[in-house]
Length: 331
Image: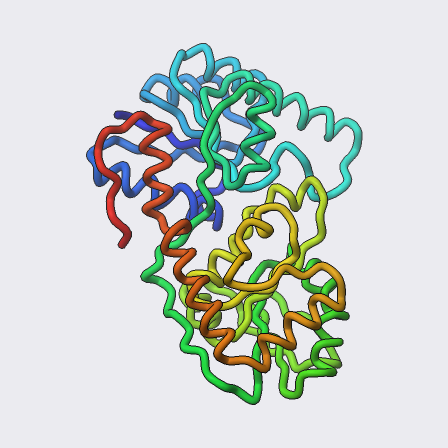
């Protein structure tokens, strides 16, 4: 099978996490996979024709096509699948009416051309199902072997860990009052941030680790409790909680806001917290109980092995593409 993947950012984290493992696996099975970088303003028509001509199927990664592109791809008669792990049909920031109209126009055109969707969570899939497009859920997953499992022990400096980017740092900053309130009750409590910029606090010691692909797993292992505060809106409901997936793979217990996919990922492996009081209570419990951290951390790792390894992703794409070959094993 000849599979053409269209993306706007082949060097970005979403492609590295969602599409690169799939492309590698498909090649191992003997399929021809080519990656095409779509310009911000869309392909020229000759580029659309070139992609479609050499395709048995086309995967559009996290992009809404311009109407002219969508019509041209659809006219080629090849199956077209959309892979997404964000609410790309909305916007995280306020935009002009013209910008919103253009987005909705691209959404309608892209949806019209699609044969199916592979979505990072149920919210995203349900959005497209409501428009008559079927698909499957494939959470953004990890190579489990890349993560060293935490060995929990009694500590005088229990450490909360948060991993993210400068674009999501605002969610952590909104939660700082609750974290600082917990610090007033828990001697030695610390916060470790793994990001492209640090967060500031005078009420809790903050250690910053600059994020990189090479060091993120080791940095996560320095934490004792993974945290994932996030507000609820139509943009965040589309988030696929990848930071929690990383906490699970590391064997950390988790405290998370009950929003979207996060609500489904926290059971015997942590606590959901919404109010300041709930955050303080959850942090206090974990900070003072190494055995609880160990037990719930083990449940986290088991969940990662069960539901968030790349093997599960391969199974979803095998079904989507109608492949009969067995899925390759994790590396």
